[in-house]
Image (cartoon, rainbow, N blue to C red; front, side):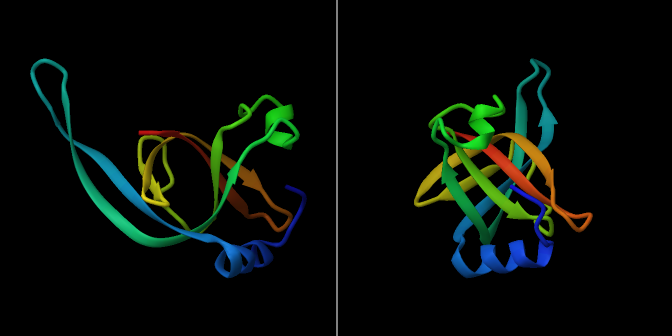
Length: 118
């Protein structure tokens, strides 16, 4: 992604982006055997851009992601895009495995989330 205005990116995400649900997962406690229990809460109607990467995509060429990986692009105002949280898109749940903060041209950023289907 080149140097773009955050305002432009946010407008595009709102205009043509997909609507997803973000599931926030926090560890509520850990058993004596090391098993973790989670508390979950959902944030619905979050807008983002969704892309399934091909070998010609820049992020694949750079070796950041693999061909076929699904990535979600969120504006900087979305605060719960963190590794371990989950995204529901088109009735399918994905776990966030990697988050990259990609800078834009006006000292702001876009969050790029790589996921695995669960």
